[in-house]
Image 1 (spheres, rainbow over the protein chains, first blue to last red):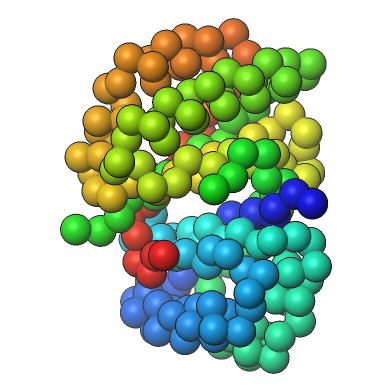
Image 2: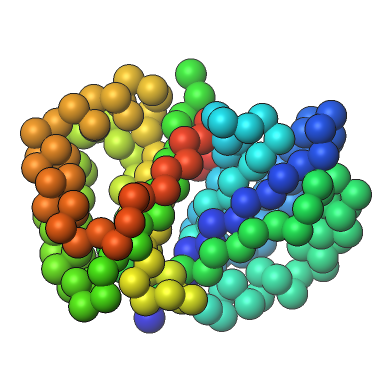
Length: 100
Length: 100
């Protein structure tokens, strides 16, 4: 079963970056504590644009990704992100080729 | 010192995907064998487009990324990729916020 990768690109409203990082880090700690199938949930900030964040995610399989999206804490964080985003997130869903 | 992330998106000419994977995997094995500062060099294939590959990379710091780009094997692979790419690669250079 191929690993599943996600690259999520989020544009945050100017001045709301710190708040985004707080909400994201809270979500991240819950993901890493509760989801054995989530192998990576790392957030980066673009060097080119301080309001753009990129999240690199890796899941053991499609089922792990599906379970992630159905958690209460993920849905709750999504609601908070709504007030911080400057536009719709861009999601790239990927099949692992050479991983780890 | 913040970790450095790279998301590289490569469009490969139709029919040359297998050749790309061979060249990339050869490069990857040299990177992982020779570069302690390269902490991740994983390649994925887009679920939406079978000719698009996404490489998720992580480096200990800027110096490790710089050293990576200066290796002979990276330059040699770059020359081979030139004949396989359908366009210029897209590179996102990122500062780590919450990693590992």
